[in-house]
Image 1 (cartoon, one colour):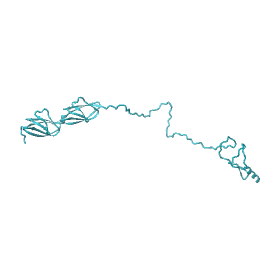
Image 2: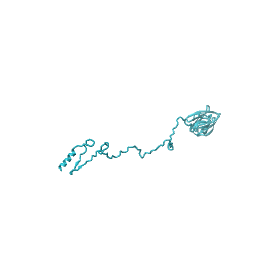
Image 3: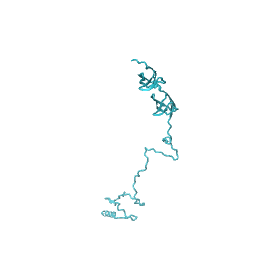
Image 4: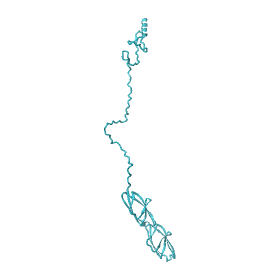
Length: 253
């Protein structure tokens, strides 16, 4: 029995060649014997590349499939397929229209103002002098609000706020006489007449009334032989006064 075991071990340790004349792979494990003399076959699980077939060819292990690396759009991104030659739907598109800088600006709307004044006045519109009345034609103005100033050396300055609608003729009638008080005098024999120490006339005769600004005024009658007489007057716009003086008569104290 011992001799058979030694012979089996010797046979196992002696290298042998395959049928193709190649040496057996020394890395393969040597079959072992169990205690009963039965050889134990150890399977080589090392993967080898195929050598063209044969009984000794080892099959590769089953490997998991490689991951799918194809890029796909996320589900939250909507995709649209365009059909070649199909008309584009522009119903939901907004087209921005840019202003054409080559076009001239729209013309301003215009209106006209006609002034009828008594007696006369120099007219200033929006700080611009436009002439003396009577004007030869109505004033052509931009539509909207305007400030009109009427100036006369013997009358207080009159300011008007005028609204001129588009394509409309606006007429304003102004009497400067309504802005002042008027004074008529009957003087015997005659006298130089002063208002607030300014010589205004010699009466008689008196061809037109003296113009007084509204308020408190000082009337002075001066004669070279009969002396001087002063009177304080308080007048309002629109008043008309008529006074008589006899300078030959001594006034009562």
